Length: 249
Ligand code: URA
Image (tube, rainbow, N blue to C red):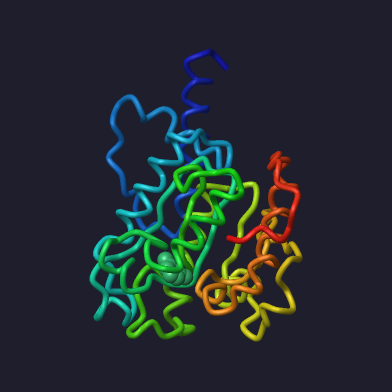
């Protein structure tokens, strides 16, 4: 094959990979207008080999795919869709349950009281919020902060899966029962039985731990979550300099 033909075959191959990547994310159309400079990198379809800037573009595309979502009944009462935020190239991804009142108003995850506990945990682990990625199982606030229902979780699942597929963090920390139950596919799971033990989600280790809102009610259990956090740091090979597992969060 001459070099021109090879180049075309490569481009076609890239396009095919890219199309199946978007399809795996549940996209019905290629949803982005790529700026010229981004075109090459975003169309390589490398799956999890993307740079942080490519991941940022893909996350923006995923966000525009969600649009002004009315796919489930949570859309009726929500104020703002809370997509998630942080470093698209993050090593650690925290996944909570659903936005609460403050998150619904601000459109950002974990910015209320439970968010303060999560932020302290992230800081104690040696990171800023901007260094990690924070998302939720469902992107809209359930009325009066009730648990999200199965149909709502299932409707939103492809968007969470898309976020995970794009970010491909080294470790996921699932916060609370609903997050762990959704990622394991075991709705009957008890958080006390599974916390502190890694499980696998599509090749990514997941550390289930308590939800920050639970830790506000039961501060005596904070050291258990800190223990789980130390395991996460060990897994990603991060030096903490913190030896005590009794550290308050
Ligand atoms: N609780 C969650 O699970 N997620 C948030 O974003 C806020 C509170």
